[in-house]
Length: 299
Image (cartoon, rainbow, N blue to C red):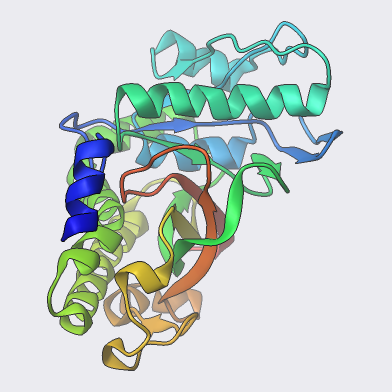
């Protein structure tokens, strides 16, 4: 109790799952790999598949620009800028190009996270920003990963169609996002952690099933995908290894989602694993970064 009281007094964001604002924002990047001073640019534009994933689940997108190494917006980015969904604020760092890009991405995230705690997150992965060092500390975080449980529009789907879909099916999208945002917090605060874990997994399962059902009704192609949410809190801090026989990396079956996705011929599961946690910024217990991986088409 003493430690919790101390942190509440010294950390303004301690114990806050999300901001009162209803929207959520994501810092996005073209497919860039950074390792020390090495910079590998796969494309100067946002990956079209990654962009559709981001647009489906987030309301505001930020792609930092730089005078030192500027990437021009393509047609997709220009469309979202005109719709006031995508912003391109300037973060210029001269000198090493790789670290300049990394600093711009992370500073854009920090600025918005500090202004709106719990609202913003980073998009990271093979098709966005992939930074192999300098961001986080190993063992200090947790990944909650949904395997083959999320429908994502393919890269050929017009952005306007995704926006139209969101206007009609926002409840299903918002429900899943809210469950993932509060996943760790709800279990951490519960006095009955095993039952809280099982209850939350069942709720995520149903939310995935509802979204997959809607995905099958879409008039455009959809991929069955993985969805990773990374929290800056180690698993041992919110879920003891003895809770209900829980083991690190043990998959939990998502039976409702699997039943809907059965035509794709794959089981849907939820997995909790250790991950990297942020070392240089105080975070609420909502996710600080997201990633996805597309599998086969959902029919």
